[in-house]
Length: 320
Image (tube, rainbow, N blue to C red):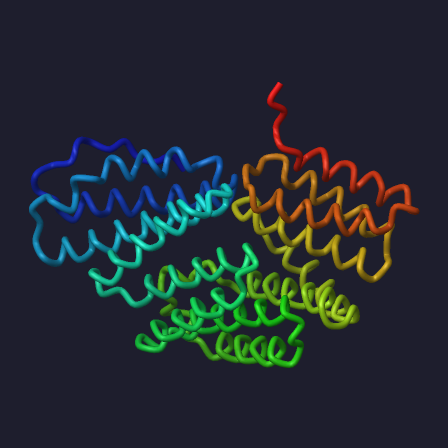
């Protein structure tokens, strides 16, 4: 989907102007899911420049409230694509601005979404205590509108933090809580920010948690992770190419942990192929981690080749 052409900002903002912005945000978010943050960061920043005068234009109060939410979501998207492109400081700045705008727009669901995404930044960076703080803040905001899907997502991400810390009991308890809340949610009234979190995504996230538990607590968690990730990979369409690539990388990692090296190499090369059309620093970070696991099995020719290929794909560009 192409982002619509945008005229100069009018002095009067109407509902159609906000609708156009909302449609462009959806298009840009779809581009991010399919091709990665680096592929769309320029388009996102260009759309933000075009919106600079919108907040100062004349509008009715209902339109202004809707505009605040749309601008908050645009900054939220900018933070996410910067994070995916490896620009963490810029991502945090955009998310901070998004929180202010979402608060002014009185949109608790969007505030929870931004807290979730800030938590994911911290999780990726290894700032685990800070990640938990953001996930807990998000819980406060999903409690008011009784958003069970959002609460499920935040609980399961908190479980991921505890899995990285090797806290098996807490991670599993939070996974159970997240699954229970997802099961009882009214799927006909899911807030827009949480609609991406489907049963397939829940399986992938649960598989990611058990992958980290296999690393930090007990290798037997691969027995749970492998079927979950296998099912999630089959369920992802090309529109969710990055999510499918992440799950392939995690599946290959599980096979390395359990010592099924031939299968690990096969899935690992599938993961490499799946990243060819993705421009994502996060994906490259995960490929580096896969390569590190493969190097531990350098007695196996396929594992050696997988390690070499991941190193080549994730190497910084030559300055020559």
